[in-house]
Length: 130
Image 1 (cartoon, helix red, strand yellow):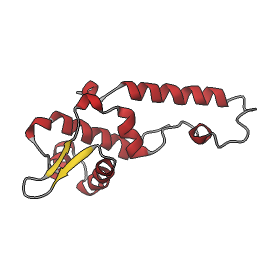
Image 2: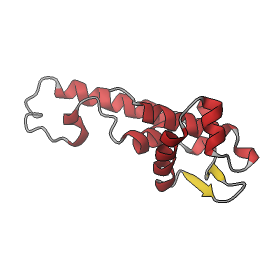
Image 3: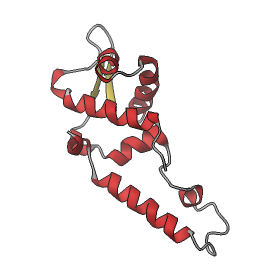
């Protein structure tokens, strides 16, 4: 499993918003400039985070984005699943789609690795990153 730039940026955006949550809404321009990111790519990522209900957005002159919950209420797993979709190390553990899984000598190992990854990311929150 390799986390893409989209997943890394999603975590960086959410962490940035957590750091600045007492300042009100934060503009994408500020996030992009302070983190050396492209604003167009951030728009795509923030749209998915917003659609998933992880953010609230405000329009207008002082508009921007902010967390709609406390940082300790966001697990890294939730954020990465929104950005990445599946975090499974191999496709067969993603949806038990492989008809060979009952006889596969490696399936159990891959499933255990997937569970370890999920358990770890579910145990960490944005507050832990701060």
